[in-house]
Image (cartoon, rainbow over all chains, first blue to last red; front, side, top):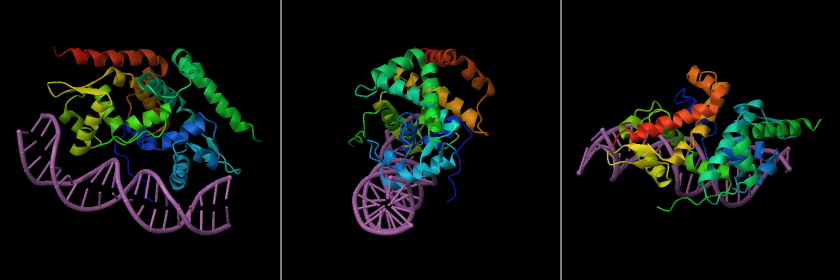
Length: 135
Length: 135
DNA sequence: CTGTATCCTTAGGGATACTG
DNA sequence: CAGTATCCCTAAGGATACAG
């Protein structure tokens, strides 16, 4: 399957082409923010992703260098994926501000608002820790 | 036309459902970062958006409270849209870091890296200025 | 210039069955 | 458990033509 050709070299377009669809960002959320790593864990997402869609997105994440699959069958975020944490945090902040009915932990939002960088650093290191904890 | 029902109350999901498609974010980019405001200006986007798609996205942006259409037929970002600037900036930073071949102005990227908050503030006020400049 | 309308094609997605 | 494989269907998208 030839990968769809890129429409432009704009950085926003690159982001769109990497995770601008209805599922990829949710898988990344589970991978980066919810500490999920196995197929069945991703399948449990409350948005109810279909098995074929999930398999496809996990494949793409690997192709795009955002995740690796270990011998144990668990998916781990790469550094490239970890660098998306600021994007995710800003999205959460935006949704929490503008969507009444959004279910973001108030504590998280407050922290993101006042102490964004240290929150990102913490999330980052918690991912890394989990990553190395299974020798 | 009934609007698609939301899949969950997760803030990331809210973001996905608002601009998680292949075009909305590009229109927002033009609106927020490129100072474009008229239909023909958006149509000039290098990604070549079709007329019906553009009309649809402009409509949705209004429905979602991200843009307003003035009597002059020009589209203006709302405060809700301006609050997406940090998200866009983080995306640009991420793409500039991880996509060789991305065409982001080096000056902009440096500024974003070292002086993110003031850059966002500047972008925000430049939008506002443009907005009020036609009395 | 700012869009509608139409037609057509394809990719994306959902349900479900099945396999190692 | 961790996926493939199908089937089917709809929404999304592209190309144009047309209209006020």
